[in-house]
Amino acid sequence: MTRQRPYPSDLSDARWELIGPTLTAWRAERRGKGLHIGRPPEHDLRRIMDAILYVDRTGIPWRYLPHDFAPWETVYGYFAAWQKEGIFDQLNGLLRRLLRQAEGRDSEPTACVLDAQSIKTSANAPAADQGIDAGKKIAGRKRHLGVDTLGLLLAVWVTATGVSDNAGGIHLLSQIASTSPHVTKAWADNGYRTKVIDHGARLGIDVEVVQRTPGTKGFKVIPRRWVVERTFGWLMHHRRLARDYETHAHRSEAMIHVAMIDLISRRLTSESTPNWRDT
Image (tube, rainbow, N blue to C red; front, top):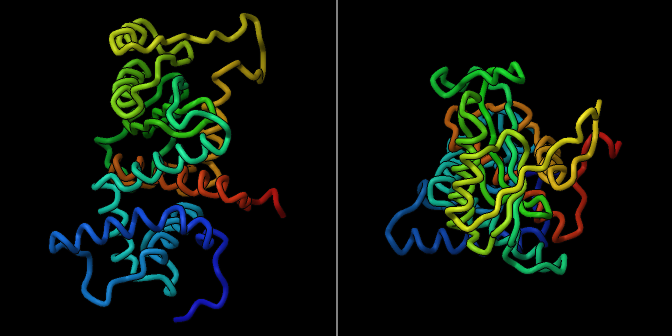
């Protein structure tokens, strides 16, 4: 079936120029090793990425992909392979560095902000991968995020909600220290206490807990911490992330990477992200 009109989630030519070389290099490497997904003729990588963005943006199940895309089994196969081989993580890092440079920043960050978000799951998630956030009364999973001072993703870890912020913070700091060694400062909320601070010190990262002003009622913008809260808001523009629909936690992490790839590539090409407010 020939598609007459592009979907709003489709990659523009400018965005494909940013993303395409990494995916093309991945395919060339697999060909060199005698590995490939599917049988010739191979599927167009741009259309595959369009299909993944469509799922992430609209929130539909894989089986409900429109028929003008490749078969859903094929699209999911590419999605799983790119997650397993770190392609989404690689793309996120590449685009983050480009955007930081475009914003007049050093390509590598020196500071980060940590936070976590508890989210309900769908029936797809195994009970063993879920938990209960006693404070927020949410049964499901927890997204632990580390972002730079622009709100761009540095690290993500998806766990059961029962995993403490302390455990999440320790994991994030280890991941950030490994992939972004220039980071020497981190800001976090009250959920990140002594163990996180001590772990950060061992890694050469000064963790500062930003307190909420005592006696404050209602919504209040908190210095530094608002950056990661805004990132969670950005992610909610992707309906696949409004609830955790993934069977496996590492696939949830991949969906977050895909959303950030979508957001950063649009910022680099000065393209809007249409949502209901635009109507």
